Length: 199
Ligand SMILES: Cc1cc2nc3c(=O)[nH]c(=O)nc-3n(C[C@H](O)[C@H](O)[C@H](O)COP(=O)(O)O)c2cc1C
Image (tube, rainbow, N blue to C red; front, side, top):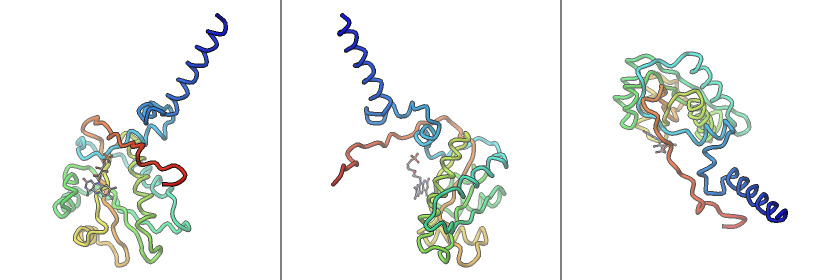
């Protein structure tokens, strides 16, 4: 009887460990209590927003998160343009075919880079952009990456509307606002994409 109880105990403990480690392919990882992982797993692109401004303190936090990102040789070749002016947001929406949600967003952050400071500026600026997306999620905001780079026509729209100086290229325009609905993140975990030791 005592042996039997021990076996049951070990079995229950093992099942608990497997579940906590996400051995089911990621489903239970969503229930992790680690707040960073919760934010990562809950993030989704948000394209519809409440008619409510984003507090200046929160925009400041998004920018601080952006500038905490890693960059090659710590060059930090990024610059950010924060846009809250309604007419400017509407002009960007009119000129950018895949960023129409800007016409209903209370603000956006445009992530720009300086190729003179780093040839692969777009990689460094991408780490900053991802930090903005995750920080927005963690603050109850919703955001979406809309591409400017590498499309010449879209970059020209952003450059003209925001009067970017020569030598500064826009990577992406990130509309930010309070999400209009709760929404569900996509489930993307795919064990088939993982190759152990060698492909
Ligand atoms: C490099 C890049 C470019 C993107 N460009 C656009 C865009 O122009 N417009 C848009 O609505 N979404 C854009 N997205 C968002 C993707 O459509 C979105 O991340 C993808 O569908 C996965 O959905 P999720 O973010 O909700 O997980 C872009 C995302 C990335 C990373």
